[in-house]
Length: 252
Image (cartoon, rainbow, N blue to C red; front, top):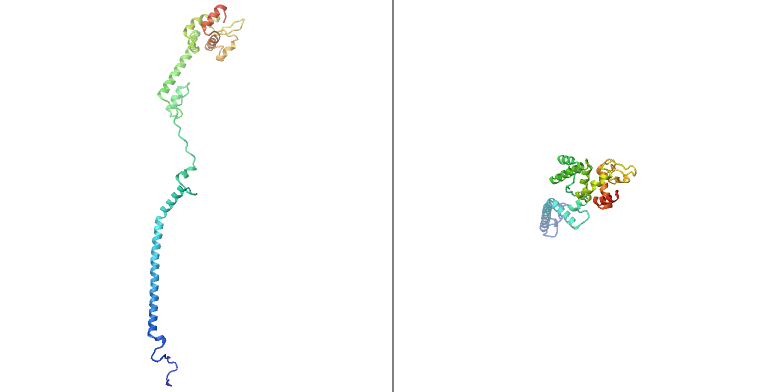
């Protein structure tokens, strides 16, 4: 080595060779390595973008299909009877059943007051449903009661004639009843036997027996006649049977 050469001169390798750091193959290898590393980095980033796009697509699909999947899950739970499942039947199970609607029944109005029944129909009272047939029936019953009341007032003989059918007697029994009670009381509802205490048209003894047909037995001819007809029927079978007995004994 010449004496004037710098002691810091780059060292040399083998004869005819360059230093290892400056060897063409080494440099070429370093360049190739860097290129491969850069390409590898690019390859690594490309799949990341693809994965992100797929993930976004999946999330979007889940957001869109979410309500449908939830509804299907609820339907499946309701079908399988799983706890917490709710179905239209289960939702209504805890509710009290609605009261059944009752059909409007045909209710007969008070018999004694047809005017009140008509008024209920006019005012729309749902508790009273009237039909033409019902109104006619009520009117007929009222007329019948009116005739009966008229028949039970006035002449006691007419009252007796009107009451005969209710005890199963025909009008032919009047030919026996009239003479018998004419001799007993002369059809006077206040007639009193001073010796026995017998009272009224049929001369009931004791007089209080006639209360069987009403508390007004002392003043109502109809009440007295009802009791008299009941008595002759139960004891003699008919007024004519009682009259036959009376004719023999002068009492009955």
